[in-house]
Length: 168
Ligand code: HEC
Image (cartoon, rainbow, N blue to C red; front, side, top):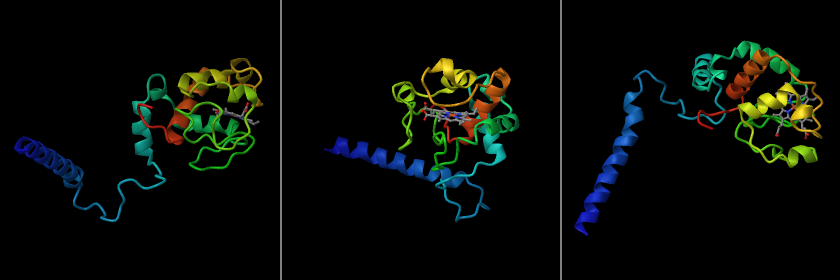
């Protein structure tokens, strides 16, 4: 009995210490109203650069501005914002770590529905290089992006802009 009490006391103390941690390290001038995790956070450029730096090579050296330019090839068919609409293609928010062909009610081809893999940078790289040969029978009418550097930049941009969290 007594033993159990002491153990739970330590747990409570540890929880208290953890709860105090973040608050005490905040600068005194921080606005009290700023929520710790806003629902749809708009990342600052500095936060984007920090996330970029955590990506595995070669994506950590990606050029986000060039990636944004390359995304011009996709945006007639895809949105990337959280909760963004499907167009000719599905919304791509959260695509990294998502099983292929599973976004909402989008009507995928049988090929993509049956693909069964999870999107990561490597899969996306192969898909974007040549969608037709990567997954025969898919319905994405896109010739492919042959330039490896542009694919690197585009994938880095998509990671940063689609809600990817390091380690996913
Ligand atoms: C002409 C329209 C069009 C363009 C341009 C296009 N896509 Fe697509 N995309 C689609 C369609 C349609 C699908 C669904 C294909 C299917 O069901 O076979 C798709 C599917 C995808 C998927 C799979 C999504 C999932 O949920 O499994 C990814 C990733 C993707 N596109 C990325 C891109 C990127 C990045 C670009 C730009 C380089 C791009 N697409 C350009 C129409 C397009």
